[in-house]
Image (cartoon, rainbow, N blue to C red):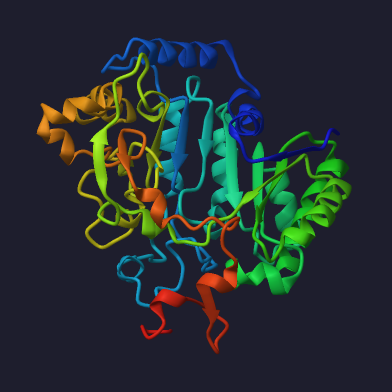
Length: 394
C-alpha cells in the first residue's frame, strides 16, 4: 500500500478527490462527464448529461457540536439559534433507492453528507450497498466518534463504501476537544485502526481511508506523530490543512458587503451547475454547498431559493428546470445581474465566485489566530466565542 500525505491546495485536492470520481469508472460514466464538459465549455443553459456527482444529505443530524459547524452551541448567535435538527430528519431507504435508480450508469459519485454525520443514520450501510450495487462510488466524511463494535466496523468495511474520510484535529484529548466539542479521540483512533485491520484481513482495497488533519496552533506539534501513526495503522492518505476558528454562519449572506459582479470569462465561473448538485434529506435541491447560504438550510422556514424537490419530480427535471438554466446563465456571465435584476433572487447571488465581496473579513483561519484568542471555555467545558461573552451560555 502506498501512503500519501498531502497539504491542502488545488493540485493536492485534485489528487485526493480524483479517485472518488474515477475509481470503478465505465465508458458510460466517462461519456456522461464528457457531455457535461461540452455543455460547460459552450455555456449551455440546458445540460443533457446527468450530474457527475451528487452530495446527498441523508441526514443533517450530528453527535458533536464542533465550533465551526451549524451544530455548535449557539451562545447568543442568532443564526445558530434558528437551526432545527429533529430525529425524523432522515432520508428513507426507499427515497434513497429512487435517487440511485435514476442516476445509475451515468453519475460517478454519491457523497452521503452535508452538515450531518452519516453515521447518525441507521441505514447508512444499506445505502452504501445500494449505491455500490448500482456501480456508484460512495464517499463519507465523518467525525467517527461512535462506540462501534467489531461487528459494526466489519459492516462498514463490507458495505460497499469506496471512500471514507475521517476528521482528526489532534492526538491528545486536551487539544482535540477544543474544536471537536463532545468528541473522544480514543474512540476515533480505535475505529480507524479496526477499519484498516479488517480491510487487510479481508484483502479489500476499499474503502480507501483518508484522514483529514485540521491544523490549529494548539495541535500543530502533534502533526508529525499523527502522520507516523496513521501510516503505521494502514491509512491510505492523510491530508493536513489549516482549520477555521470562525463559524460557517459567519459567512452567510447579509454578513458581508457585495460589490461588483466579476467579469465574464471564456468559461463559466463555477463548475457546480454543470457537474454536481446537493439533495437535502427531504428532497430539496440546492446547487452547491458553498457556504454563503448554509445558515438558511436547516431553519424552520428553510431556504426560499431551493431549485426544486426530486421527490415531487425527477432529478433530470430539476436539473434542467427554468431555475437551473437561469443559474447557468448567471455563472456564465455574472454581469448580467446589472440588466436582469431578477438574478438577485437566485441562490448564487452574492457568492464569491460571481461577485467581489469582503466575506473574507469574517473568516478566522487558525494559521492567524490561536484558539484562546477567540474563545473562552465555560464551566461546562463549552467553547464560548469571546465576542458573545454576556450572551446565553447554555
